[in-house]
Length: 336
Image 1 (spheres, rainbow, N blue to C red):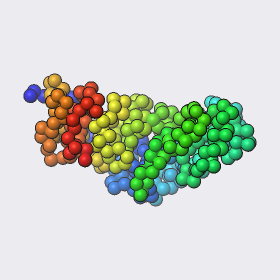
Image 2: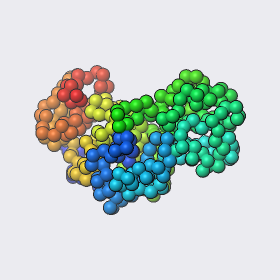
Image 3: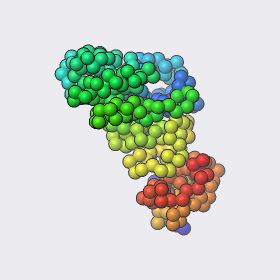
């Protein structure tokens, strides 16, 4: 079957890039420990470009995140960290008067940003807050969620730092802020304004802060990291060290598909293989791996010698077809 090339030269994901923006949980670290190869790869990139860190985790301050990154061997200052509480507080400033009392559901990372912005934090609806701002912290429980519900029944604004359903931690996958926001949502019958990924505000803050004109964003979640970067017009890079793996990539909708798929961050510095499509677009070859769509069947024509290239070829074939994943028969070997 005749093939044609999508692009004419092989480049690395870093070619032409002036800033690397990276998610943290699942990309740089899991729990307290660094993900293999992340520190070395980011430090190497930092020799020639700006590195910034974007996190939806609202439980920590930018200074504590920078300290953690430094302890892992990265060169990071608080200014290098863009947090969802920072984006949330900026949204809050457009909804209430300066100096207003705000009910805070969350931890130090959120409370500190509320205070820095000149608002007065409270943890009680009895203080007649002008708004509720909500973010994740491990200590958040029923009492705090109930106070938010009591306050929100008065009709005041509600801002959430992020809506992540899960977070990766050292022991596995745990419930994220989205589950806590959902609990309040069910109680009050409305949704908050959301500041963090996949909303664009947090990406716009990062590109402005770092003066980036051609950044890339590295994430491990399609529904927040990749969708958000795509919405913001930033080249998206998905790394398979966190939440979403091959199965989710194969099924990704058009808005949540990354430009690059990496096994780990070493591949930021390696030539990224070309995707070669057949003339009718039904077959994709990446490296020595070829995958074809024949009717409803996704067929591994040649597995090649690199499982990652095989996944890239399968994703290219499925995504290029315009077909929904539930209408296709996909070999389990592509995602098991």
